[in-house]
Structures are given as C-alpha cells and as structure tokens.
Amino acid sequence: MSWSYSRVSYTVGAVLMCGVLASCNASEPDTANPYAAEFDQGMETTSNELVREVLSDYTITEAEREEVFGYYGNCLEGYGYTFELLPNGEYEIGERKTVDTRGNEEELFQELAQIEETCRIDHLDPVDILYDAVQSNPKNINFMHFMVTCLVDSGHRERGYSESDFRTDLENQEFVESPEYTQCEQDMSEQ
View (cartoon, one colour):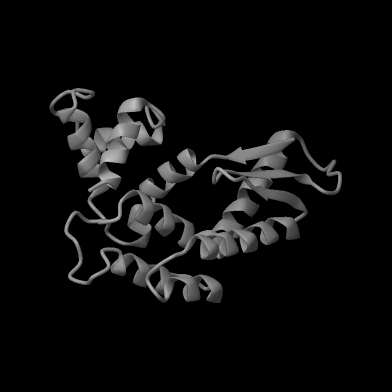
C-alpha cells in the first residue's frame, strides 16, 4: 500500500493555511519582494536551520526546494516509510519497510498522517508553500479575492459568490481541478 500526494491537494491546503505564514493581503509590501513578510514569518517560526537558511535570501530555487524535500523524505524514511518525489511535483509515501501487525489499516493511516505532519512541519513548510505561492502568484495578489472576482466575472459563479463561499468550495475540493478554476489560477500567475 502507498499513499500519493498531489500538488492540487497540497496547494489547497496551503491556500487554507495562508494565514499561518502571514496575511496574504492584496496590498503589496513596500519592499521589492512582495513576499518579504511571508519569508520573515517563515524564518521566525521555523526551528529548522536549513529552512531558515533557504528563506534568508528571500528566494527559493528549485534546487533548494528539492533539498528540503530530501530532508522531508529522510524524516519519513527515519520512521520506516519509503518516499519518492515524482517528476510532476507529486510524491508517494510507501509502506513501512518492516511489517507492522499492530493495528488495522485505519490506525496505520492515522499514524502515518501524524508522522507526515511532523516531518512536513519540521522539514518542508514553509519552503514548499512559499515556493508554490511565488510560482503561481508572483506579485502576491490576494488569492481569495482574485479567484472570486475571476470566477464571477467569467460567469462560472453567480454575483454574490463570496470569499467565504470560495473557501468552502476549496475545503470541499468542489472544483479545484475544473477548467474554470485552472484558468483563473493561470490568469493570476500572469499578473
């Protein structure tokens, strides 16, 4: 048995966790880097020196992201799970290398979820969240506001559709892989 994690579900989680890093406001900071506040917050909240070092120059390269993913994978492997970062940005966490007969599948999945969260928080966040945010929204435009406006203006949602409605749709993954969502997200990355 293995578990796959897609960028879509991780991105949705990142959007919903945006407030953890900083405000993710529509107004751009006065600095040259529109994500300066988020980088500062990431450096302040992490206990991981590698993560702090990666964030310290206010940019994240693909190589740095891959290095952080390597430490994340090592963390999972330290608990006995296999880990593979796939070329498309998704990753798989495989079965423990040793047979575990202590519990049923649901109990083992819950244990994996706790281990994955620990490894992700210690070794991956906020580098991967900021990397994805900068790639998809280089100017740090208010994601919620932009997406709601785009979906309404393009006729995919009725007038009156709110940021709260959008958040609910994200939590339920109502349309995150739909063409209209993808188009609005692409439009935002081109701003």
